Image: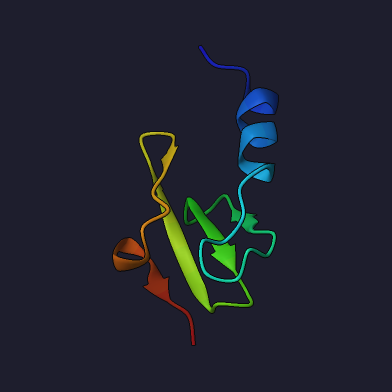
Length: 59
């Protein structure tokens, strides 16, 4: 089993591919949220999908 702290540490190193801003982690939705770009990038099977076409637009 993977150490959750290691996973969290890895997620904290990612930035938004559009704005280059820090992302926030939404554990409930399993997404990385870019407030600047108003996008949420999904995490599937523990892997962040940082493709703009896969991101959900935020209101």
